[in-house]
Length: 363
Image 1 (cartoon, rainbow, N blue to C red):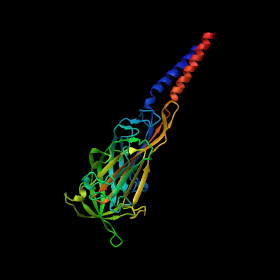
Image 2: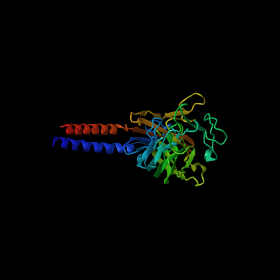
Image 3: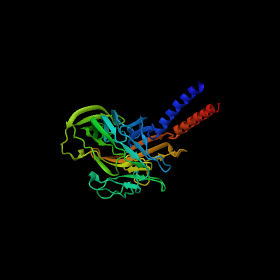
Image 4: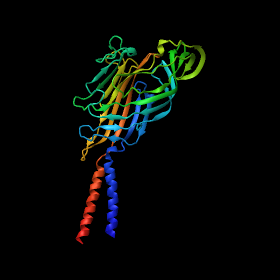
């Protein structure tokens, strides 16, 4: 009777272990996703996120050379909320308010599929997307005729697996209002002139960081009224004054929201442009940043991979309304748990059951 009870208990646990082992391919991978604007700095660096997730994903290729990771739709997203942003480093932008809703599409990451899979990237885009741009741009200050003075690079170590892939997050933005500053206040004239521009991204467009290399996305703004205003220390509108004028609908400044994206990678994304100046060399003084992806996963005794992996995806954006150029970077951090623990547990219980059975027969 004692044996039967023990056998039943062990069998039940063993079946649970078998079920867990057979489901090892869809482990509960977890992590976080965010989109950052490196040049904004401080509390306003994160454009979206960080959004933590702990949902089921699928590890598809458990090999020691860089196992693939597939993410089903809507695991990292939907992401939604309201946001108020300031841009203290950019005197021609006051503030932005908006409501957003984003949805993530299925994604797969693997070796040989990152942003620099066929060679390192060094890119300066063409203004207005009027061509392929400069694909061998060595310095932002020498982009070539018709190209914007902003550069993005993606680099990998010589023996790196060039791991990565495309991550598409569709974003809807509603009730957005961007306040630009066409007349910046000075010590002699502290009254600024601000321009309110509504911008609703409907239907959804993809966030540029993480999408296909060099893919162009346009998000045009609408011309809005101009007012006088008193701005706060970080550029926000403290007092909105008198109405000044409404720009014509044909104003070329409102060909806004030009952006170019790159795939996710475990390599290093870098960017540079003229403003805000954070480094002095090589001249002229300019802005420069780097964001590095990593793959810290290690091989397990069961032949899989476990550990942390960080993928980064870069993008360049141009704002003709304000004259600013800036970068975006998507950061996807994933923890991959040990895939073989359940198999070992199952084998252990099977061994106990076999031992108990043998003892019973010997009596």
